[in-house]
Length: 140
Image (cartoon, helix red, strand yellow):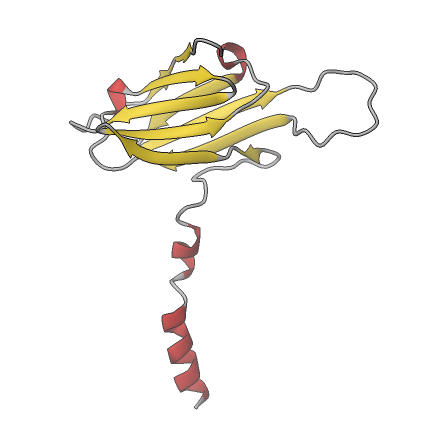
């Protein structure tokens, strides 16, 4: 009876590794996770990340390697007297696996009103590590 129950339970839960498939590929100790939205728009895979209070030219690095897009940001705390702060400071990282068919060489990024948008066109697959520059939006 107990063996039968155990066998039935194993069908209710996916294998352990599958429980963590949608978690970041890499998150170092002491880093916070960046919240993202992922979608497909006009033939491109699009990732939007909330990054308020950072300067994309100085504080954000985007890399792509081996089919994984990684966004890393640093937010430093201004030193002033305050009663309480719920803002997060320090390192923020998020890695997402790119879908098959993304052309890694044509990935672009823009930053506007605290939101980073990374667009990866779907097309021929070329996998070579590189850093992605960030262009400023009209109000970013």
